[in-house]
Length: 144
Image 1: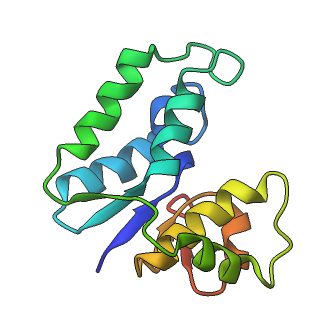
Image 2: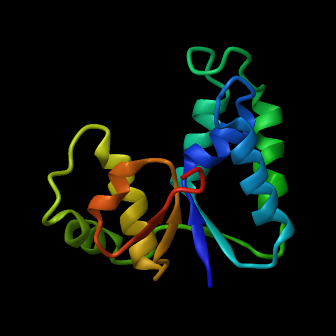
């Protein structure tokens, strides 16, 4: 079985001030040490770099080099794959959002959901309940 990780898992694992830091770190360690194939979408990677280095989000934000090193550590694993938009992505996005009013903060979630859909990834680990509106996803909260 394969799965994808949402940005909040990565962010919590890096944010020592978060109440989810320890469980996120433990969960991410399980992903890293396992051999189950897992996916990161480019929107997840870029979102992590944006949030983890942002002084208004973290009390002690990571430097760009630290955040990139964290991503590089994940990308170097033999069981990590990165998902990018392929030809026809716009049609998949439109189909994904056809029955879901998509605006504001839901746009990046819909982007990731459509990316997962395009690549046939059905399981997403996230603490974000908004993903539950996409009925083709098996949304799992590793902190529940």
